[in-house]
Length: 315
Ligand code: PMV
Image (cartoon, rainbow, N blue to C red; front, side, top):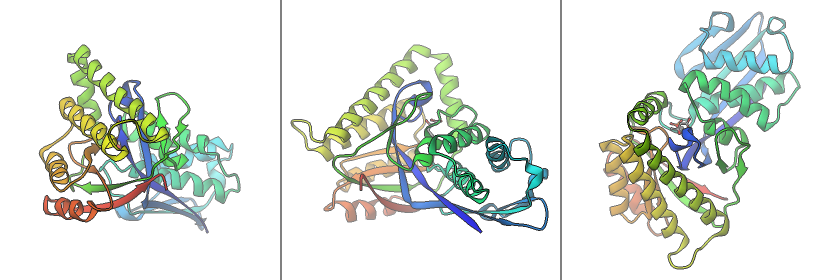
């Protein structure tokens, strides 16, 4: 049996604007993982999506099934005929779905890696990322490519749509709490709504996208060079996260539950807080220091977080 895993991810800043060509920063979250295993089967290719409670044949998968697409694209990329293989492919994941943690990209990344390893033709990170990008299109419609990139590379990245990702060297590691509203929110829906709003008021939205892009550029400099004069690193990063959240509210992708989590994190001493990913549900990030972590975690739980994951960025 061959197995492979891939991490979840969060977007530190720049979501939505990244679809319109602005930069964004994303980091993997190793605390949640998707795993794929591939083993010989008596006949055909079988997909066992354990968490979804579904087991089906590749031949019976619908045309827009991302798992089936990942299998077909991987074998096509390696110039191997699907009909030669009899395999059981089993997928499990601890990443909540439709919550901005990149579960779809992680499951497909693990699958592509496990399958390529099983046929003894491991693929490079850019190859894996570009296959998973195709599966993301089936899930999200018009993805920027940030999810497949950060998950396939497995390291913090500065990402601009259509360009090779720039690995981010994080000078000062920092600690985030990731709080789940428990509200599933498919990215496709919020991306579509932002697009419709942008089409109605292109200039107003373009200005907000640019302002979000400026935050991502500033955050990149801050992460790579450390402390600017004046405010401490964590405070400065917190300010950028807060500004980003305010702009995401203006874009219309926050919701009362995300705002409540962000406010309670602040009240308990977080240096910054913002939603992460598509929005309208899913997860929120709070930037904490060792002395504020316990209080912020407790406040998030009191404010309704369904689960709180701690992660260090840059370690
Ligand atoms: O998959 P999510 O919910 O983390 O969203 C990805 C980020 C978006 O900018 C909202 C969409 C995209 O394709 O970049």
